[in-house]
Length: 70
Image (tube, rainbow, N blue to C red; front, side, top):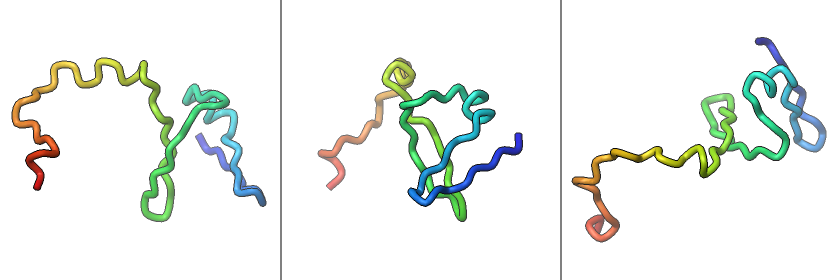
């Protein structure tokens, strides 16, 4: 996919429809901008429902708490 956009005088960019459709992005969705060299990585911020169960089965042994950092 080859889609481009132009930065407006108000420093806004419209994401091309083809990109929005492919990524299933919707109006009102929150994003984070991650600087990467000369560019920026644009990632949607996951909702709580998407994070549910993410750490299930994680090994809690050897976990360092703030108390043992100093």
